[in-house]
Each structure stands twice: as C-alpha cells, then as structure tokens.
Figure 1 (cartoon, rainbow, N blue to C red):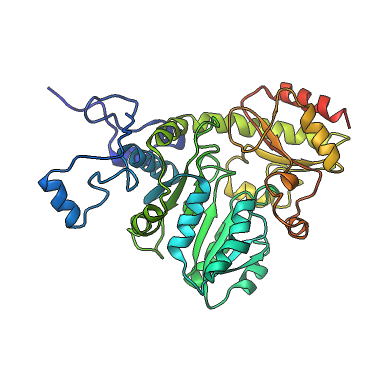
Figure 2 (figure 1 turned 135 degrees about the vertical axis):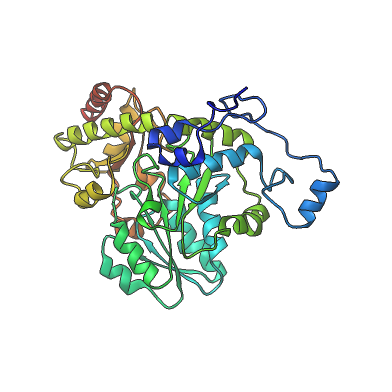
Length: 406
C-alpha cells in the first residue's frame, strides 16, 4: 500500500508559482481533509511528558494555551510563509496588532524611527503620539526622496518604515535603495504591504526584513474576519525573532489571532490570486476612465503613466493593485458622489469582493491634524476606491451617475 500521491513535498511547494502556493496546503494528518479543521479550544490537556517539555522550554511545538498559540493559527502562519516567501510568520489579532507587536518587539526607550509621511492614519498617530510616551521618536520624510531618508537617519535610528503602496495617495517608494541605505547602518526595514498584498508585491524578495499585513483586507478578501501577520526574512534579526516577540510582546498584550478568524483567512488566501487578478484589471479600467472624466481633477493609480512613481511600480510589481484614488473639488462634492453610489459601497475598510469607497480626509484620517494631512498630500476632495469583483463597466456607470450629481 502506498502513502504517496496526496502531498506536495516542501521543496516542490517552494518552486510552485504564486497561485498554486496560495491554493495548496497539505491535507490534515488525521483525516486527510483538504480543508483545514478549526481547533477552537482555548485549553489543551497536558500529560507528564508535555508538562516536562513545557518546563524545559518548548513553546510552539506543544499546545499550551490559546493565547499562546493554536494549531489553526499556526496553519495560517505556514500559509503566509509560503505566499510571502518568508522564513517565519507571526499571526496577530489585527493589522494594527501586527504593526504594534513588531515595533514594540524591536524598540526601547531612546530609539528612533524614520517613517514615510504617508501611512495609514492609525500607524501615523501611534508613531507621532503614542510611542513618544515611551521615549521612542519618529522623523517623518518622503521616502520617494532618497536624500531626505538618508538625512533623517540618526545614530539611534533602529527602524525604517514605509508602505509598499501608500494609503491613500498610492505612492510607490523604490524599495531596493531604501533597503540599501538602512542596511548600511544596521537599520531594520519594515514594509506595510496591505494595499498591495503578496499577490501584487512581495517586499521580502526585495530585501525588506519584516512585512506587516492587515490580513483583514485582501488576504481575507470578504470583509468577514479581522487579523494581521508579521512575516520575516532577515539577516539582521535572529532566526527566532518572531517567536521571541510572540512570547515577550504579543502574548503579554493578549493580541493573538482567533482560531475562527485564522480559518477564515486561511480560506481567503486560496482565492487571493484570482481575486487580485480581477481587482487589478478593474482598478486599471476605472483609473483610465476617471482620468478622462470632466468632473475628476486627478487620479492616483500606479498603473497610470501619469503616476509619479509609475516607472518604479513597473519595475517592482507585475500588476498594480486593486486600490486607486481620485479627486473632486471639495469635501461636499466627495460626499455627494459617495452617497449617490448604488453598486459600489460607501464604507470603511478595503480589499473585499464588494467595491468600497471612502473619503480619507474625514474618515480614516479624521483625527490627523489638517496641517499633517496636507503634508501627506491628502485633500478634502480625495476619494479612495477599493475595487471588488463587480463588472468594471457596471462600476464605471455607477460612478458616472454619481459624478453627474456634482
């Protein structure tokens, strides 16, 4: 009786193309189910051997307690390792938990961060306000300006932080030069890849040390689960760095990914490639359409030749993502447009199968002072669009009808 034929070897799995990596994971050992089981237990029964292994220092190899780790969570981590091209992954309760755990796991009082001006608002507020309470300071720069990044680095700089595609301005920094500047000084590079997802860009392949993702978005893909992930491939950090911060930071903060959400996100990964193919196509169609629309002042999409970093995006990304931004005259017009949409949804968040829209200045970035929003190039009339799986022509017609009301 043979036991082969039902499992792709790890070596062969590593050589698969992205879509195959996203879809495949080994069948369950006990049942050979091709769908991973959900292990919802918060507690696990010990015996003398397990007890001794825990006492001797084993952690992830044994099931200790739900806050410390869970088999379903670990399977999600393994799938993230495969699609990110990572050596290790740590799952968290949300994207902001991933960012917070990564930063607090790396930094101590007196340390300094260099960060792009334009990041997700909660990230910016944490760096600009909350981390200062712990003696950690940040210098904000335009990471598209390499000289500005170099000038901002200090002797106590420990982290360079940026987004692969910036929220909401769609800036695309040149990653390799940023990595080179940072690594010359032993500075850890962290990239938030949420707007791109691993289907569009894999920063670890460009030398980035840590990638943080809000798995809530494109990875989950259906607006029905919240989670985050930190993925690592680094020569600057210890091989067990993510396991260190699992225990010294995440477990202490109580921010693990729940088993059910891990299962939902694991399922979402399997359709990531096909969803992003369609969403990227639709985003390009809408961006081109908006660029020709008389009511639209400006469009930001990395796939457009008019985008300031279009050449960089072409070098770094095989496709340009499912996010775009366009601008009308002011906040009142932006609200009228979004409130008039019928097919597209006016809502927070992004990355789902429904096209969602928002007004960044007065939604995601509402708590950021106006002066700083201007520094980030976020205008009152800016509209952010996360493309879904609807027909692109139907979406264009929906937006046209809404734009006709201004």
